[in-house]
Length: 270
Ligand SMILES: Nc1ncnc2c1ncn2[C@@H]1O[C@H](COP(=O)(O)OP(=O)(O)OP(=O)(O)O)[C@@H](O)[C@H]1O
Ligand SMILES: [Mg+2]
Image (cartoon, rainbow, N blue to C red; front, side):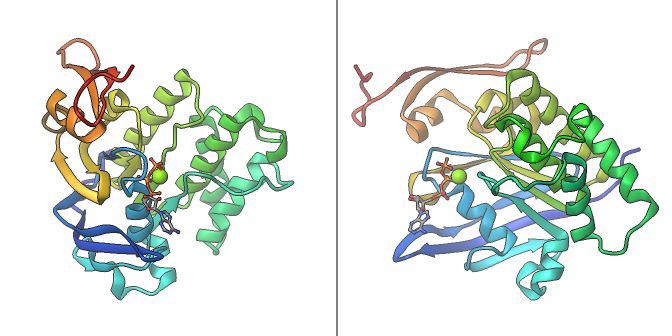
């Protein structure tokens, strides 16, 4: 069943300074819709993680972040955290909890009044992320990619209205990259929530996201819109300093193939 939800997340004139270094300066015009994945892309150091942390209220900022017509700055930290959840790029040290306990704990932390549905939600989430066979293992007995899928499960069972995942497929094998992104797209659709992910793989971003936000060096918004609009060979040259081939087809998934890294003068690096 798909939930009709017109909620949007809108970022206007957002600035963040870290130390004495302005990382984002008046970032504007970013809008994400409920029901689909929005992918945040851009080179290392562009400010993707900083932007996601600011939206979550974990980094001090100037400007406005509105969700569903509410300025999130008007909410206290608990209220904000109920609506918006950010899973960082690197998760914490593994505890001596089992996979099942760790995911249930994330649920109970965010929904303190225990309900009938909690256990079933945790079980279903483990099944969907292909973690059920590992349910009784402790977190320190998992591989890096398995731990990353547990962290995604923990984020999802919190059921925020805006689910932000920072490079959620960075440690995953090819099967699980596709499987997790397919599942996240279904979660966005079925729950009618905003799923905002930072991701480096542009072919996957083009395939699974409805909208892209592209940041360039210095935290500038380079483009927003559909993958087809944003991902052009000229823009990849400018933003990533690469020569790339971008292919769109009616029958096949979109494909962005990086062909060569360019020097700052536009030549091919040797
Ligand atoms: N505590 C800090 N103090 C000063 N500068 C920082 C701090 N943390 C990060 N930065 C700088 O802020 C910029 C943005 O960092 P951020 O982590 O948001 O980039 P990113 O786009 O997520 O990159 P990546 O793709 O590598 O994850 C970088 O230039 C980084 O060096
Ligand atoms: Mg980052």
